[in-house]
Length: 352
Image (tube, rainbow, N blue to C red; front, top):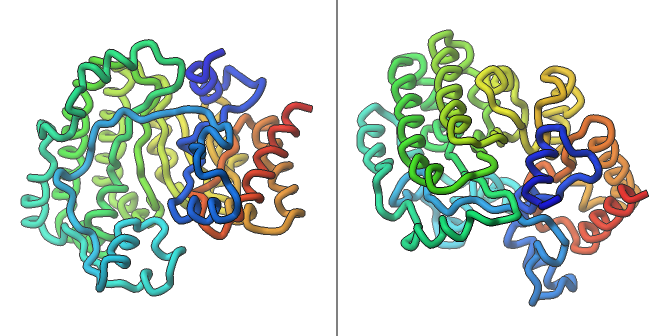
């Protein structure tokens, strides 16, 4: 069985001999890699090869604003470097967490200007030698997917929760318009790629969607979200994409039902203590693909807690067919030998 088949079948519940270890869901932060090199990890071997993770790739088409914008107004270059990595900012340095940040969209006029960066026909979105790339990918044996931006994820990234709340109160129709335009944009960006290449999966990045729970309090916004998630899902399904993953952090709350009703087929990375894999399996049944569920903090803890994490990973796979993976990027507080030993122990446990 090829890695391509194993990944797709595992997320469709059709393959249970061993879980894949897709490298996309074992993200290693750059500072972590520097620490691991200091800890003794070989410097001349790629991490994916070193840890024997499974190859999985994303089609290199640029979504989102082109050219990109600066999210943060910070005091120096190092803070700016961390400021653009919003998801890990508060975990890396407490000073970065309080840095002043400006969101690019705060008014209707801001959106009209910002949307000029969302030109689906921008030549820089596709690799220069796209035809050669597409030809090369036709006979691959590994899973290849597309990385969508987001709907709620982008609203939070570009507006922030406070502005989003204000606009919801004053002009909900404006938010509905933005959501429709974002789906139009993504469909136009990806039509060419999915005509030339048969992709195996799509992943939409919805981030800390629980912070936008207020959107579901509006019947108009809730219905619009349902319709736009379905439009995007139907486009992917028509293009033959069998695995359609929603990537979110924290709780899904009412969004999980929207995604499921709209046809999305898998959730990741199931933040420990917030997105219970057993509850999700019970609620949505055996056909929902599940990825994650491992508390990455335990990889930096004691040997006893790491052994517990091995046991938990085996339970996730064998009892509810959840692909065990960390619930977020591997940060620099995780020693190299901890991650190496945990991964080896988990593989040995599955082989018994």
